[in-house]
Length: 449
Image (cartoon, rainbow, N blue to C red; front, side, top):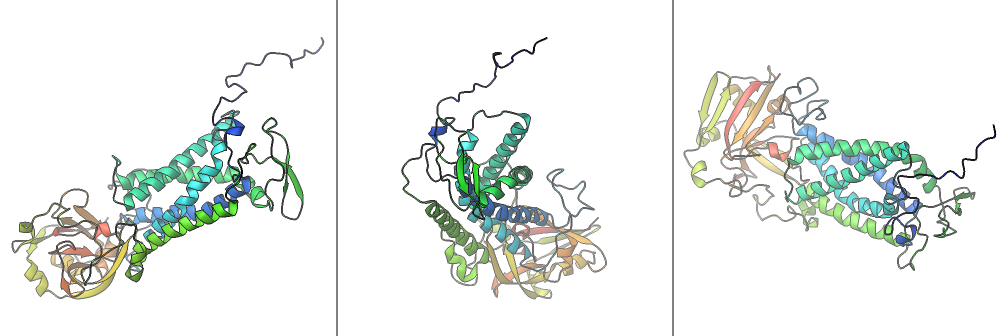
């Protein structure tokens, strides 16, 4: 039997061969700046910086539950199965959280312009036609959608959090954590799929020599690669019908670097504080008041919805220690042994401040309540006079046993102001500022599992 000629059989396609008008047409994207090498250079910067952001972000999540570890996280109030705790958060050095979270926020701000320019550089490939031509291509496109969506979600919500603009209807730490895992997974898949392409593009010493005509998108173009060899291929990011050039690629990279530097200095001013705080003129914690009490606060007394009668002479601090309950007035607390420690408050928004705090050691209060942190793994839950998200926080044994952790009654030689937590607040080394509970009313001590 003679073989049948299958070349003339009509082909039935779910997706038309001819792309629709608009961004799917090769000639729609006309910028002369796009190229595989430009995208590769931007990708290399992100490949170096994004893992640092991811690791410091996961460390921040660990610090939010300083009493948890792999052995005791089950059954606790955690975010879910991906809320992993590999070790208990340490109590030192005192600036640990401020450094980790400052790096997370500062680098995140600096890389945001790079992310935007990188997305701009690959937009033509997002509208490639056909959108899917195989199962492998479909998986690659899915990973790309998760990567782009995850990156935009993490960066945008993170910057909104820095600016205290909570326009989203969800819990930020929980959503940011799960968004991070989606982004990390998609980033790993993308790097595995595209690393060879990245290496080839970075090896290109000259930009595209021959333009690819619109009528022949598969036509070859010559690229000069490292070593002087000539490679034949197509730069699918280069426009087939470019507009006249008004800015060089070096100019685009320079502008991106300048934007990144400005945003990095903003974050550095807030995270480093001190004389550098003035650099953060665009951020909420870039300006402070004069005097020993003129350092930043997140929530003021008025914003917390508190009233003066709640912190007058009738105020009491109640200590709970299992079967024992003890109530102390502020004069009684002042009559106890006072200690002064220079400690840093580091906040999830990236800013930090270092001050000299004076008060009663938390370990001494634990002993009054019937627990000895030197012999027991004692945790402490502090409860504020305010209600809502910031009403309480739990410190693990490492923090309770540390001699620098205290119930602060004064700062920089002055009585606490209302905005800084009067009549008493928690201050501890290496923990997020949200755990340094202000306007205390109760402390519950318990043996940690």
